[in-house]
Image (tube, rainbow, N blue to C red; front, side, top):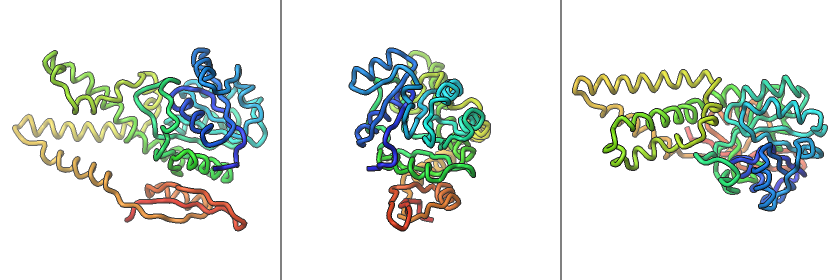
Length: 321
């Protein structure tokens, strides 16, 4: 269990923030929450968690401050908490897109020790009632590492993420946003389109809908405003959509001429099975930003942070070549 952070403040107590205060308390750290919604704050307080009436009181004396609100609310939150942030405190967030948050932090609190974060552990559910202290177990958790990132802060946050059972992955904000366009933004757009297209099958089609439709459209149950914040403003999502549209157009052309989708099915099946059956190897890393970013680009993550008299070493896993 890490002792780097003595007090953690989580601003926003929805699915991710609520799960985070649960998980952090179970790790043995002092954690306090805040939410602009009085009903959410009351629910968290009724569950036995300390909740403050203002963001100022929440961040007062906190070693780590976590922004767990939707992207459109981050700018106002930063401006509000900036005067109350303790000197030397680490600031992080849990949003899907990292470049916009990095830009807001640099414009609002340029001297703060900021490490952008993105736990890839969400579900289609939202709100305090959906919070789960085990939500982050075995989940990738992107931690941004820029040229001006304080390395000690990055390592401390990676250590906490490991303690929560998640897998810290080093990436720049731009790299993270480009990657999630293909594996988060695109699946959500496709799920919305599938949910709508399913309606064109009529009442009979909907009565026959089973696993394929339910699984493929599952994340269309997500709050629409959240989906928009994960997709809007990410130019790489346009590239991902161009790719999938080209594949769908090709499949449509084959079917229109009485051809087959067999080639697409074979390629898709191989891609999915190759992803599921990747083989990994353990590695030991030094606290070096270049090496950590290279490890992340290879699909690697951190499993433990080791501290001794010789400094800091990081254990990790990565796909075998």
